[in-house]
Image (cartoon, one colour):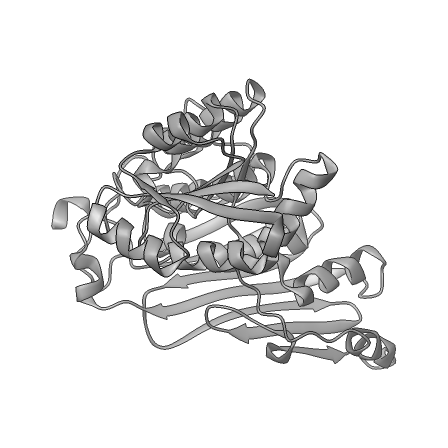
Length: 360
């Protein structure tokens, strides 16, 4: 049985603890870490009594660990991952995994010198329907990809941003593009493959924050697919939507924070009813949560493979975010590979500064 520690016992930590419990005798939660000792003790009591430590350093000194789950606010993600890698321990890090492309490249370099590996939590990639969609694509059953959209239309009121680290470039790394829509467009990227160019806008419409509260992008993919992406925390009717228009069918999902097969629809093009029939051959009630990714993570460790989502996969998504901000703030199209160490958007997603920065 593998041994895991959870660092940070805020709301998302419960999803990690539940995924560990669902994995049965494959992995055990042995320790939790939080700067708030009372909160850590309460969390430990709820999840079977793992030992409580005040810091990651303390738990690494005291316990033999296989996996560290990083569930802290975003600014601490990379330092904690680096500390774990230095101890040759695998890391499962919440989104956003880092605040910049520069930090991602630091993690990639550290991973090369460690026996541990870093995986990013992008759990929607692992729901049964998403796995089936990618498989049907690879088998050629859907035909050519042509049009897609990714809409994350959520609502976060003013009180949500009273938490000190929210709404700041320095501590959160960005607005809904970094912290909310990332799950939807990451899954879109996992389906459609390499993106080629982004044209975007971002705005601060209503929330008293330093970051954007809405962004939109038009994206061209390497295979010619054109897509739109919306990331909002201003939308009272909340929904998460993905749509893929292929040559032989439209495949759609609408959910909020997790999907099952019931949230998906497949509409075949004339003469291609076999696509819908093939889709219906497999049905699942499993929710696209942390448990699905945990199973894939453990499978990879068992087989000696790099656990998904790899740093290379993560970098593609983070470069997408950096390019979206760069396009929005410069008013130009940004191509894949364009943001290197000489770009102001490499070290921070804010880059040259948001156009509204001096209007606060």
